[in-house]
Length: 238
Ligand code: SF4
Image (cartoon, rainbow, N blue to C red; front, side):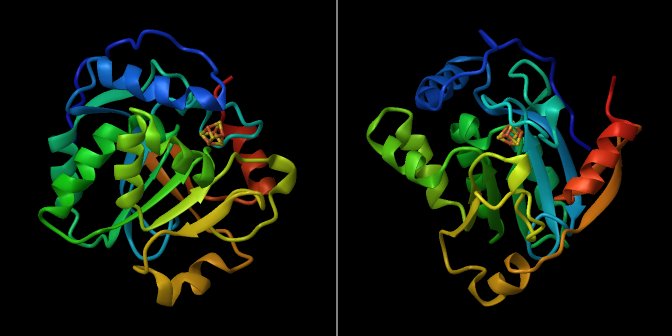
């Protein structure tokens, strides 16, 4: 069981251009989030966000506003809960059946210092696989390597096995497994999943699970467009 701490409001909430990622990361670092992550939701075990069983983490806060986003409640920078990184690492290590973690959001690259800390704490105890979804394209993230915030981006990238990058574009939702739209690219940053990569990432098949999270039904996975629309029309908050 996680014990979220009281929320602290970050200095501002706005939709910012792509170039501002460095500034955003530094603001997160300067805020009270040292040793904490701002999290929208966690699910201890899912089979719908990558190979094998995975612990899923959705971070809170995203600078983008993709029409049709599956997790609109994760977008505000001021929402979610602050969770102590050590507490989250322990919760993940307690899940003996998982092969790895999937980090989505929200935008994971806004919280790279904390996520690097989290992954290192887990990996000090167990070899896990790391899959990340980001709205930022890999080439943009790599080009940040020379700036101050780029150091933590570089460290985070080094710890990722598979990165699915790019914004969600509703009209390009083509039904291929494990990514939302055809503009998004699946990058194998290590060889960890090489042997089973095609099997998981090359299928015309979407899988979802329904989880109950704090008395609310949540859809977990990458649904097809029709299913997502039906779900949102029935269960989205007014
Ligand atoms: S980048 Fe992801 S979380 Fe952010 S608005 Fe787009 S789909 Fe939603």
